[in-house]
Length: 210
View 1 (spheres, rainbow, N blue to C red):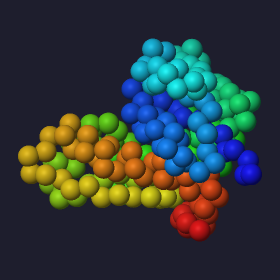
View 2 (cartoon, rainbow, N blue to C red; view 1 turned 120 degrees about the vertical axis):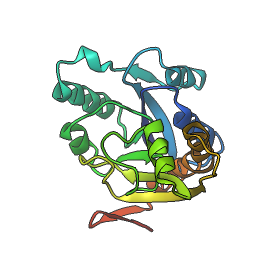
View 3 (tube, helix red, strand yellow; view 1 turned 90 degrees about the horizontal axis):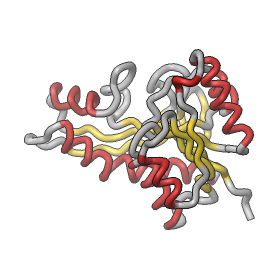
View 4 (cartoon, rainbow, N blue to C red; view 1 turned 180 degrees about the horizontal axis):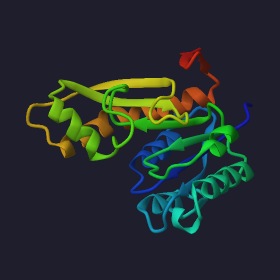
């Protein structure tokens, strides 16, 4: 029996991607992965309710209670290390952390971004801003990317991508929902499974799937 891979999901809001991971785990689609901890950057977010409903331990580390990014990052790294976490998944976690977290979990942090990186990514590209920019540019396809997180924003090795059609009458909201349903909620659990099954290898800032 393979050892369970303990997953921490970091959230700042409603937790729709967290729910996709919970549902995938219930269907047996995370390999030997188990969501062991939900960590929120603020109290009262609905993602904590999702954790409670599914019997998952949760902890709230409010950013405003820490003097600076370094103190906050240390708390994050210490909390996850103490919980024996093997894989960190950023699911709409909107708080910046520093190298202490990357050093504690090298090549073990995954993020899902609602565009096909390197398009519409980097500083300022989050939430609806991503979809507003895609529509302004008139792209015919957009999609989602799961990548390994490195200190440079949205620049880590790409694990999986999935394209989604952009329709002529799309609004940022309709495009956001379609990308979540058709791409994010599919490739995030799949990337987690690949990690938990030991299928991801990083060489020269590229991911090779074994």
